[in-house]
Image (cartoon, rainbow, N blue to C red; front, side, top):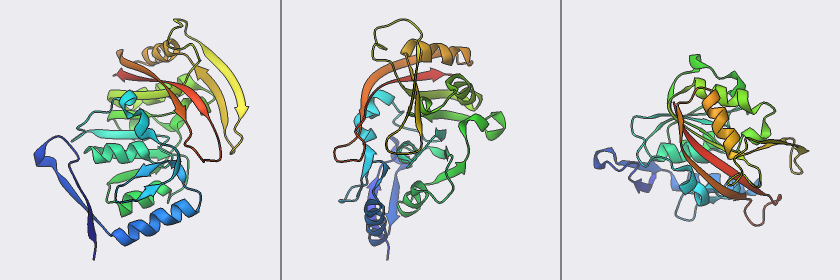
Length: 249
């Protein structure tokens, strides 16, 4: 019989409490299976000792992303979801979440969302394929994806095409991004040592802000810098300066 593992408030509104009832043994088996296969991109802690090991623990950087605490009735799009940290976090906060990436289903996110009772719609889709026909979203999140894309500005324009309210965009940045007022795009062009993907660009905060404005956002509300570090013991060892902005449609 399913065990009530999480009895959590997904939003700040008492009326929107949701008790997640899951099969604890099934959850343990899934977590063990994922970890035995090497873990995932994101580290995810579901409580009760259920931890999926991952390259990045994004809980360390959540304050920089400034996600709204209450996403009740918000339509959320997580672009380049990978193993789904932001999709899961936004669903936990009450959002109706769609997650996209270039991988075939079922992904780790599919299985985790199913076992832990999160309603997330996954669609295999490239960011460059996005346009208004895909839908309009109150919150669009694009975390640490732009560095892997050859054409960053087109990607930002695609983000704008599906955003009706707010977008949170994170990118690998130049080392002097927080202090240099110039809009710089530094071409790196290095293939990753731990997989078949590339680090193409570092971009300054000024450049990311200007891209957002040129793509049609009305203004940039917030900007933060942080160092994105891989977790100890993982195969790769990266320390990458990042900038994250919140842009308003």
